[in-house]
Image (tube, rainbow, N blue to C red):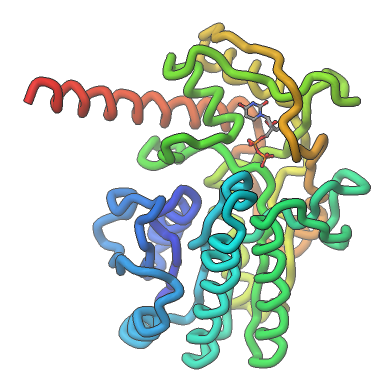
Length: 337
Ligand code: UDP
């Protein structure tokens, strides 16, 4: 029996694929490589280059590989982009999942794990945020994921499917063995920007807002290491295989770090005192986002290994240094060719 991972060549999906392979699972990937990289996959893993919305492709893959579970990562994830082009998000996230579920139902797949986001909560009334908090997304990205959650719930109820929805908080870090990591050019995430500054690829980092009513005035986030997140998916798969009921789980550590603390952690692990500039608040930012993790800890057999900001920062930095060397090496080769 084999697990189908959509978006398995992307940042989080590729960590998932590695975790499954290391656990001796059989895996196949569908990825359109719009933001993924085929060389992020181990050679043993079949990659079908195409869209998770392509029902014929998905049906062929399911039937030819005896798929028993689907872990669905494929989708678009950039909040400001979703503001500019909401229909792309409703297509890539909501409609794609509708197509995928249509085939899943047809092929009688009864285990489904879905990548959702803390963005479904919008501005929370209380932190840490429990899964029962009101969902009030503030972007088409968050709405497209929430709509998918609702659809998945209805489909599962009607067709005897069991699912786990994982609502990710701030995913960061990279494979501790530095094989894969976040390689998107122009990424806007705090830790990525900070390690780009630490490796000299940026002159400085801007802190968006230092006048929030938080202890140091900057926003607070709950960072989860991408490898721990992959292990949470593995635990969710075991949970479903053991007959677990459908559920929705926050994925974070339940601990918040401020933007300034995060930048300091990168300065410490890199030993580089890159420039930090205080800037205006970024429109739409939520002040404090921290997961209530009681439910995930009581539901899944999951013990995070990297619940520590310095490890996350160190792995993100090691990956960024490797990426920088590779890109520089390549450009030098091109220049001398
Ligand atoms: N942030 C910052 N400078 C940057 C990038 C991000 O100060 O160059 C802040 C951002 O304003 C937010 C936090 O870091 O308060 C996390 O932002 P990110 O985009 O990483 O994730 P989000 O929580 O918005 O999904």
